Amino acid sequence: MIPVELPVMADLFARGEKPEFLFWVGCSGAFDDRYRKVARAFAKILTSLNINYAVLGTEETCTGDPARRAGNEMLYQMQALHNIELFKSYGIRKILTICPHCYNIFKNEYPDLGGSYEVVSYVHFLDQMIAEGKLRINKSSFGATRITYHDPCYLGRANEIYEEPRNILKHLSPLFTEMHRNRSSSLCCGGGGAQMFKEAEPGSKEVYMERTEDVLKTGAAVVATACPFCMNMITDGIKYKNKETEVRNMDIAEMIAVSLNL
Image (tube, rainbow, N blue to C red; front, side):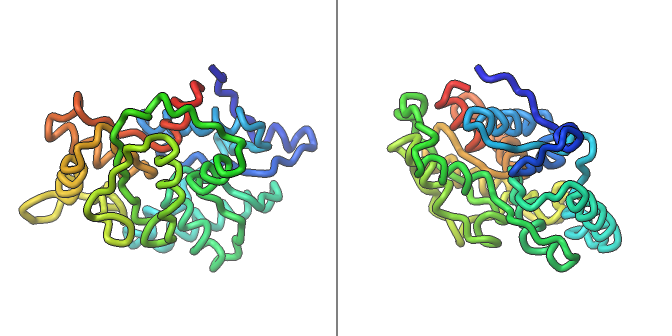
């Protein structure tokens, strides 16, 4: 088992070192107990691959994405400009993200404020490592498990990252099964666009319940997710349906870490 010892950007900078990647942990990876496990799993994978990376630690703040989605443009720009100046001070050019919302805003919206970076989603990174033979998946962990995948809006429709997560899951299990609504036709989990932070609107059914029913129709024992909001919403749906003993919600990074015994 690889211990989690995250290199901190300020410490490396003080020693005159400059890592290749900034691993952007994100608010959920830092503060949400469930998604901390995903951040740890990805950090273990990076360490096992000897990737030259660092985190910002206590210097990391929010990207400003929820503020912008909720309509607070001033707060978004304050957050973004602070981050851009911080990145400039460390000479950061490459960013690895585990949150599609962070990926999207760094890649597509920060350039408008002068922050242009090479932004890499962790699913793209992991798929590339598998393709290059640097990550050798042990198929015994999930080889007999039926797996389905929920497309996060900000990976799928917003950035057309569809094949990479599926490539990974097909390496993990030959029993990969699609939901009937997938790729560009996938249904939102109901948590994006700052919906996580507001009361439900009038209607006959919550969006996350509708999506959870899509999951259950596949008969999968594991629903793979690649977004902290999706994980929260679908996990809630599984609990609401009393299916916790039958269906697990796991992030793709967690599944790889399990297969590698990290």
